[in-house]
Length: 191
Image (cartoon, rainbow, N blue to C red; front, side, top):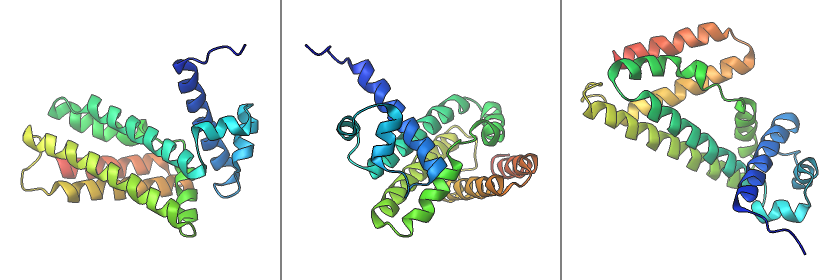
């Protein structure tokens, strides 16, 4: 008789599969990573992996959703008062260094050849922009930002700046300088 698999075990295995996929995408590239490789690394049958994820796009979606959840949780902790907001946003660049930066750009490159992946990236980006707009609107309602600033514009500026600094980091540019640029932008937008 097979032992009963708990919900906790399913959750833990799912998270482990996501972690392994992220590592594989980073190490070998999105296009060269095979579902079979992920299953082998996880020491599970390929069929077990397919119970959790239909394909690599599903794995990418899971990685994206987890990153959005981390970002949302981070925003919740820094948006309590104006001083915390500004210091929290200033340190955001240092604190929210994403270990999957290379994967993100690898997948952006792959999306130029894969329309389904491009659509997933588009949806992921839309969710991030919408989440930032929501939090910017909240800060405006608290009086932490000028009401005449367009929330969508601020969201686009923040995302574009952050992506640009991620590129700088990958290219080996000085991270302290990247951080200084981030802080200067935050001060201009929020002071």
